[in-house]
Length: 137
Image: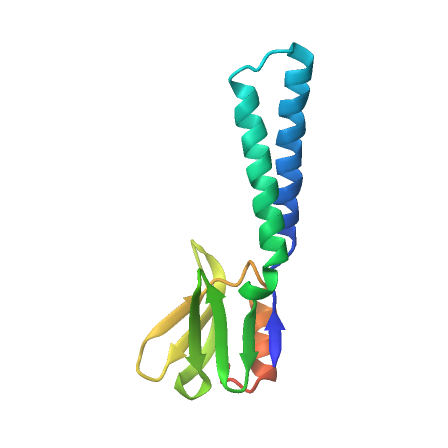
């Protein structure tokens, strides 16, 4: 069983940008001594970004995808997407204007495009699928 968690870089940068906005708003407030319109916006935006980034960092395990011999599972927005290995015809990479990722072709003719840039590269994901004995093209 291979478990791939979302990358840390997005969430750490969210926390750092939030701290930057918060410190900028606090510095403007301290320098001017007035609570100007931009100050509460910067303070709120900074707090929201920082707390949201910390919350997602703490719950990162809930967004992990699982690849094993039984199939492919990914959790997004409280919805579990399960593609069973028996239903997968082939797994291959794709590239279009929206990005790059992996396409799961099912036996009934349906295709499912998975954009894996928040987890790993498409080559790594294809290697994980090969290690789990999923049919890769």
